[in-house]
Image (cartoon, rainbow, N blue to C red; front, top):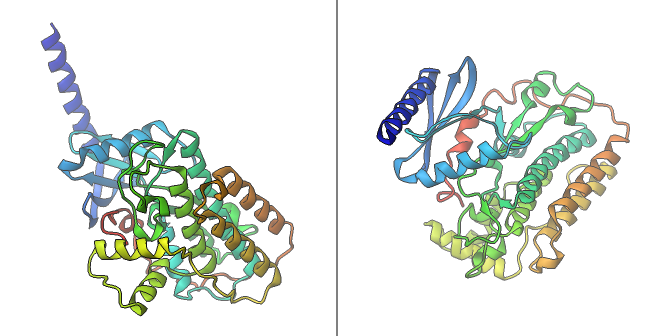
Amino acid sequence: MLFKKNIFLLILQVLSSQIVLSQISNKVYNSKGSEKTVYSCEYNGSKACLLEYKNLLEKKYLNEKFILQNFSHPNIITLIDFNDNNLTLIEEHGELSLANLIEAICEAQFIDIDPISFLKFKLKILIDIITGILFLHNKNYIHKDLKPENVILFGVKKLADEKFKLNNPEDFVTAKLIDFSFTKQRDKKSIFCGSLAYTSYRQFLEDCGASFIDDIWAFAVIGYELINEVNIGEILEQIFKSENKPMETRNDFKNNMKELIFSGWIPPKIPTETDNEIVIKYTNKLNDLFEKCWSRNDKKIPTTEYILNKLNNYLNKLKSINSNLTEYFAPNEFEDLPDLSESLIKSSSEEN
């Protein structure tokens, strides 16, 4: 009787998998990384992102599936469906990654920007990110691989289509965290992982367990890039080149980062290009907040709750300031941005 029951359950599992696969159409290959291959597709008539993990990485597949099944939140990507037989996840499809947005900003694709409104827009993105992190931390989990590529944005293209002439543009954008293959519970044994440019000093120490500090440190680097409109990878590359450091392998970069971090280095202050005193004031406040997140004294590092309260406070104060919105973006700014899916496949083992 037990044997027949097991056979019946197996048949149901196979049939279920076939149903899932049959609902996928217009599957278009995007990119392939060391962990998974990512496609854009139509699933039940809606655009979706399909992630196929490699056969030997079932543990990472199951880890991400577990997080997305059990931790639903507005600032965490939504799992639409899955197929255990093929190690496939189907997730909602965003518009572009935060890495895409920062790249566009750094390439000076913005014109006639109202600086206060644009700062509010950036703050809303950071508030969404830290809100998602706080949700994970309240569940006693740590993301472990935060970087701009692992944040996707919704609503930006609508704002661009309207040339940002909508009131309070920050109310139209939503940021969500993705890629939970490294996510783990706090205090569990931690291996060195993630993108080196966003790695906390703790991960360069031996025998350190997973800590909320890892996410807070990475968040501050992300915020630093967005607010100051810079690429942290380019800054680090310039430093290592000026010191004639080897950079041929990931291990080279890891050793360089370890030496730099242990020297007490933090990302440098960037002069604010605008002459708007309000924007300069709050940019300095944000940079001071980020700097606190890079303290080597764990007791001085702000909590996610503290960071969220600070960011909300800054945004509310900026909202009280009257600012006439002007045209933010060049009309065709987002036409050539890479598809969001490209940001999903950059393996942590390949990132610097």
